[in-house]
Length: 72
Image (cartoon, rainbow, N blue to C red; front, side):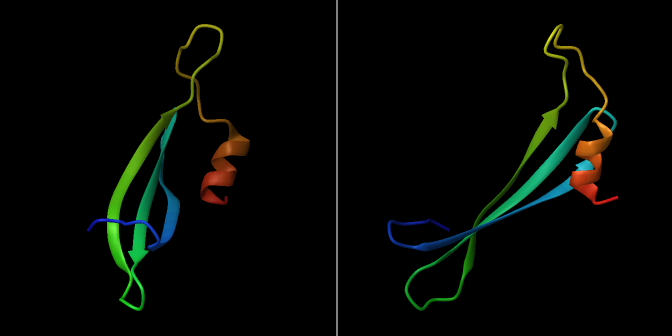
C-alpha cells in the first residue's frame, strides 16, 4: 500500500534473529490516511554482520549487544 504526504506513519522494529556473527532486525511500516484504519505499507529486514575494523573479518556478536538484542 502506498504511503503519501501527510499520512500518519508508524515504524515498528524488532530483532528477529541473533546468530554467532550476525543479527537480523525486522521492521514494519504502517500508515493511516485521515480516519481510515491503519494498514501495513511495507515489511522488511536488515541483516547486520559484526566485523573487525582492522581486517573486515567476521567477529562474534559481542555479549553486551546480544543481551541488548534478546534481553537475556
